[in-house]
Length: 570
Image 1 (cartoon, one colour):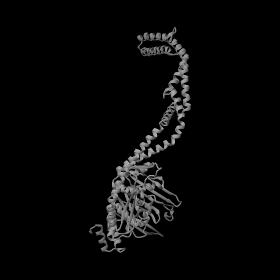
Image 2 (cartoon, one colour):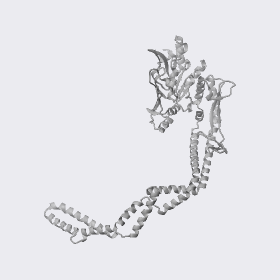
Image 3 (cartoon, helix red, strand yellow):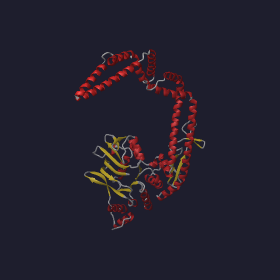
Image 4 (tube, one colour):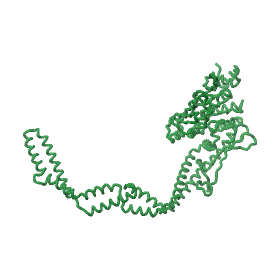
């Protein structure tokens, strides 16, 4: 829902802010008051291009800002998060048009490209009138409308999943084919490297352990002599440290029997004596373990040398060597078994092509069935809206795949080109005059007519429509009386499912509004400015009466307005 619209220094508009609501929002005003300017400004929020000519005289830039309630809109959330933008329940869209020629775009106060603004607009609003931003005039949306009406979401998800899998397999297959000659060229090199690495067979944590052992063996004589010397001093020599510490302990024991203040120091001495015994015991055991083994020393040096050579050749670390071995092992195995791997992939691709084709076939069958149903319903709706001799058709076509193309799926034994929706292409065709052949909907010229056609389609497809906001400009062109009343009723019905913003000159439509706004043009100093205001109930009655009787409002017109609006006179 569009919650509010701010327009500043845009054409005849100096500064207006409008708060819109749910349901049917009607905008009225005299010809030239600025209604079309308002719609043009809204178009900027949907990504339409702007000219510096819109900047109000004697100002430097125009600003248009809209705040949209996007709570629960998954596609908007995905668009924002996919572009590293913050998502909130309120989406703030702002355009700034400067006389310097700069065109700045913002989503939630973050600068973005115009294309991103347009992507967001495509997910929020359909604007119908003399504007580019109409979903019916983009043929890629026709299949989405048809599928939404047919409730094909489950099969579409299944197709998209298989479609994605097929594309991934085809990409892998192409890459594998491109690698074939390279793999064959490098097979001998890989074999040599595999043998070289496997001959050493380095282990992840081996090098540090080998270096520790080598350090000990290279210094074994020093370790043995020094350990022996320490052991002699501590324990084995005449008048050793252990002997002297033992005498000291005995003397402290004698003193402690006389003076208890020596007891603490006696305990410390006994601890030191115990520690000294542990050190002596360790040294005695260590001396027995020290080996002078020249052959083991040479073995370690050779092993570390071989590992160092591998490290230099294959990445500088054992982990890099092992990683390289795993990578070339897979490449070598692939080269060895290339033909069987290609055959396996081709079979898998063919199976997925058939799987995609089966799902696409179901989708196509459902579309053709639904197309017949909506033809009758839409032609009936258009007749009610004053297009009496309309013919509506949904063209569903598919294309056989070219012989050399690999981008195809298989259905019923035939090869078809495919897209994100299966193998169908869908386009709406319409004829609005008797005797004329239906033409592509995008070629319907009249703004009012295309708006009524869209209204007719929306009245049938409304529940499945993905766009929450519909804006209608010139929808009442060329209609009056009963048709105008019917247009109003359809708009009112649609407003229970969408937020509708519509510009009208007809009382039959204006009288059904949930919220009513009047655009006015006034003289301010030596300038003319356009403004808009929300009308109270009494003002709404008067505005509808004015549409019925002209500038001079009669009591009869007021009573007629109340009757049209379903309001009793107090």
